[in-house]
Image 1 (cartoon, rainbow, N blue to C red):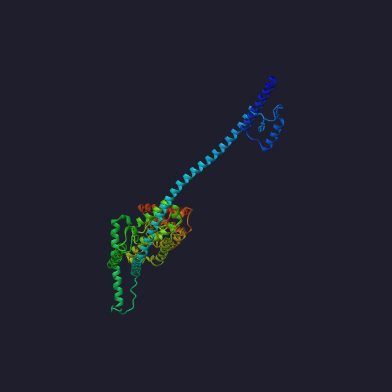
Image 2 (image 1 turned 45 degrees about the vertical axis):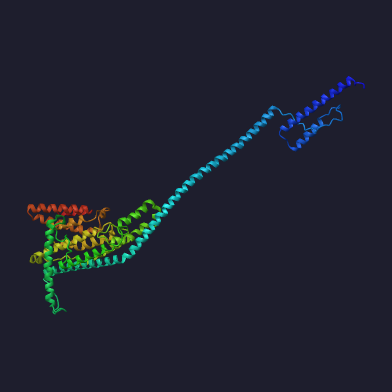
Length: 506
């Protein structure tokens, strides 16, 4: 029971205290290692080897003390390296944040575009719905309109054909009456008698007596019409005062009454065609309004559907029922047909109705009315000449020049004026010829076709100058004024060179 040595006890205490410090140091290092970022496995193994190799266990630790598993020793991290690593992590986090922000911006943009597309598609859907409704209504209207026209077109064509036949018959009667009137007057002044074979017709009438009575009746009607026209010209100065310029399309009262009644019946029948149809399918203005609405609201589809080419045919049945036809374009087929018919009618009138009598002076002395007849026929030719040039700009210029200048002016009018001894009346007629000559024909200079007319003007001026020498002062002054008018006419038709020829004979 002896007590241990004090020195030995102190030595043991010192060893326990050293072991305790070692253990705490190892625990602190282990804790620091757990908080640090793990390194690659290979590096950890090398560091563990290094730590294990550098770690020394105190020699004086008794074997009985159990040694715990020591964590690997981590290298010492400086403040600068730690701040650098933290900065790198912060930069990486910022980059990731920016990436996410850009992705969010793109997503937001896509979202806004999608919202805008949704609104646009909704609007387009509404527009498409409205267009569909519009075209469905228009389709229904067009189908009903075409069905209505198909039902009424037969009646319209029948009325049109009947009216055309009546007008054609009336025109033929007027032309026939004019030709007979001219022939009757010409036969009277030439002393020709009625050339009809003796006998009776199917009604038992004497043919020669009947023809003579018919001719006398035509004369009485002709004189009555001339008196009425003369009174009308006095009451209306705008119609002019020259016999032959006034309209001569009158018929006998019985014929005129019959045509008037027939035409009135047709108009009444035409007015009743659409009695059972509402205005939307009859009133041409309301029908046009439907297509105008289409043209204004959807012009591209209106053009793609070739509606401008279809409307003339669609409106044709309604236009036929109008008493006054609207203005049509010159390039339309119906207008071209009208122009072709007008040209044929002009040529037929020139060949069949134009007649300039060339009587001897004895005839004029024997029949004073023969001079009036010749003058009336001359003015009638000038009237047709004027009417032909009213088609200037519509019918081909070459065709008009052929009919008006080559045909009427050179063949009839100039010939009739050469046979006239009334020089003052001739100057008046020449002025009318030049006045009705379209200015567009003379834009590039004189016309070759007017050479005959210009030579006649020179000869007319010569006749007036010759007459001036033997006339009194008053008549001489009048003739000088007429010669001055002729010079002005030559200037208008671009024939200034002919004026010098007049001066040579003055």
